[in-house]
Length: 477
Image (tube, rainbow, N blue to C red; front, side, top):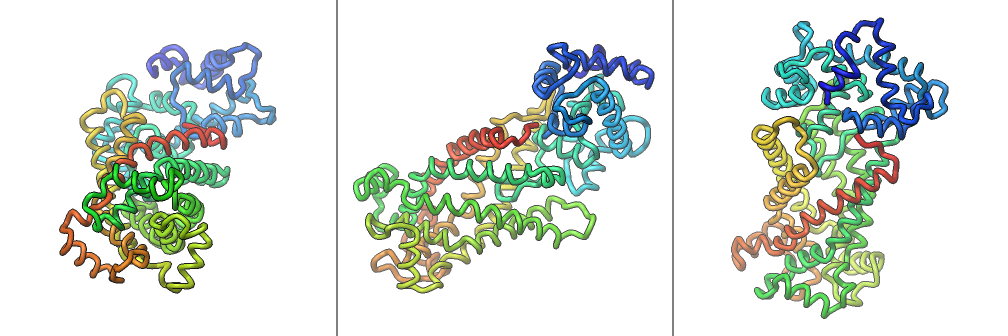
């Protein structure tokens, strides 16, 4: 498509300033689908889609905000031409910042070097894949014409925004994972896109957790009561829960699990920004290691803040019908009979579990994506939604597998007071007791329903997240 764009709409000879009006006029006519002399946002979206030109995140909104001088919601030819001329000047500066040896071409080694300056590491082979997606003439270098054509309608203004565009559109991992909060650009923060994305993620999490709540409650029941009966399996566990409390009991504890999303997300996002500032000097770029440490510490901070709700969720899930009338009744009874300290039972293994989970999740995700890029990427470095979701689900599963014994001990400590005849042990004591009585498999009780909910949870949250972003007006790439 880029070859067609250069040959038909953006001929090489049109690089001369004298030819700019003709070049822009040809393109404007392609976008002005109803021929009324102006282009609205719908025409822009449909026209660009038909031309096959890749758009960056928030592209349409930025084009209209920047180019619509008279604020009438439409672009006439003069506004359109002025926008593209100004944009080309910015893209020229970005191109020069990547062209380290000033030979008029960008090579793979120059991309690697620029990313390293920004604290991001990729192999030269992966950099070549980036070049291949932009390179129109097969030379494995990108000249100014190819660069301009590729980013013509992606309103990036500097190299950092271009790298963010690559991150979103090519699937190259730069250190983000589900355990580490999202990175937001200054534009996203100023425009309010950041809170819309967080809200969309919160709603997606709520729907996903509610949809998989029966499996989650079964996991908790098997973690707490599994040792009492070797016969507690998935079918038996579900039958026992339904017999004891009916179908509705399968969602017991889900309300608390959903309610804690908002405070946990807010605290994690705020703490993440603060830790990044503490770990980097002013003006310094945040690298992958700093992002991982900041994200892990932010997760620990958020868990410290909302941990009493984790205890309440476990108590409600394990509780019998009529034992608690709701969240507040549960909290009141715990405080009355066990004191304030009960709200932080299992806190230490919970904190210790964050590092192996986040670290392995991140490492496996990067390994899987690098493997795909090295072995399966051909014409494009974009792996597509299914590959990305698959990598995310598998890396999350590996993270859970590594930290599961700590999660099981945490849950048992949270629920110890509710199990008749169970001694009140600390973390080390519980580990010893489980291994001596149940062996190593005892540390993984309930892991089957936990794994069973990974794929539906990822799929449901993705679908809801994408639909919520559209509803909230979060512009797509």
